[in-house]
Image (cartoon, rainbow, N blue to C red; front, side, top):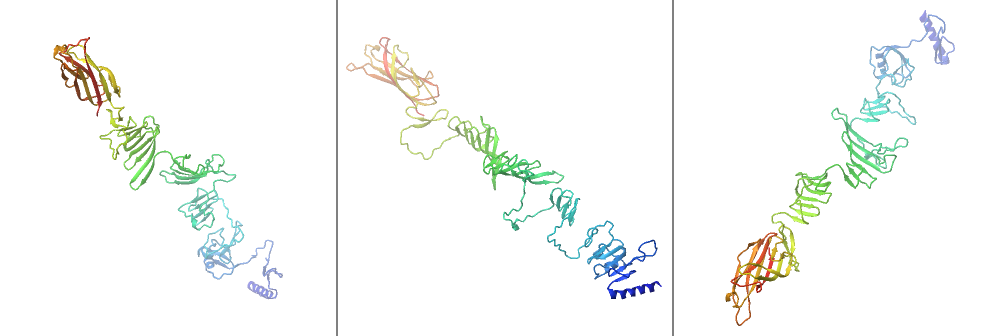
Length: 551
């Protein structure tokens, strides 16, 4: 009976549809293409009202092809099929409609808004390439958790909880955390400035980007062995307060970084290595600077101390052999050449207190040479004057020898003999010259070591036959070195004078070389034998003394 009633209703509906293009069930006035009115809209009737649509399992829904959009069905089992393809959203029994791409679940207990593909509740896979044309509309994602948005796992991750972005890291620790290598290809930039990377350190309301801020690029190690800073590039304004205008760029290295190199345009473009206050175009502070090329290696090294009176020194070091080759001291002393043991030692050439020493670290003269055969002069030309000659004194000092500076004495006087056979010293009457003031009384005192040429002559007078026994007398001339007779005593026979002529003089002459050292003395005297001199009538001999140093 029920089947007959339904058939009649369907038939009537068909007839009504052809007439009015609308179908009503339980209503004579359908308000839509198909209008089904509950038979019992209210009350407690047990009669079932509703519509039963096709019921299929997930595999059947997944297998359908050419499904028109808006097709509605009920999935009564998910034990078959897979949650892939058009069935990506079919994860439980329920009503699903086809949106033209996938089956979309009608059941929505949270009342959330669905989009095509249902990406808000289920995972899925694009079947083909997709392009989102935003036109003039923004596409915004909001979140409040770590890794709120990601692409291919950690390849790109947005930490919405801490406002960070990670590339290669799903847990970024800074604003932009990049794991792995990067390439900034400035070659393809279209910017007029061609800046591959712009870093701003100063902004109104935030900071001035000065030395106090000391912004920079930090390089570090996260290893468990010696972790921490490796190096840092620092930059900004040189001011410690607001901003002064001059800029700086510095480089730090080490776990506790120090600014080992500092550049600034605030001091005529000076560069500091080991100092942030360079005082010259290139200022190195803190130790040795090395220069090398191939097998050649040299160093410039400031150091403390030095020679007597010096506080600091500067060394040029041969780093191949690790020895000093030149040392400058701040008191003006210099050591040059050879192996210089330390900054207070001498070299082949040593300058000390304005004196230059060669072979000695303690020069006593303007030029002090200490060596075997220390001086060779090649290419000397003949002198055009008579200035003198060079001589070396007993201490090795080279001096100019001329007529005024040579050790030379000429003296004349008499020997007044009043007692026979007794040596009597000479009595100086006059000195023609005594360049070095070496002669006095009857004594010559050597002013320097050397070889001396001595000529001593006494002219003894002839006497009459009434004197000296009538046969003349014997006369002597003697020289003593340090009180001891030097060489032979010179002896002559003084005869009586000719009866027809005036008395003449007979000379007793000593001539020879004497080697003396500084302070040695020479004394001179005469003697007569076989004579009869008296105080009243003495024998007076005139002497001439010439002494000259010849070495």
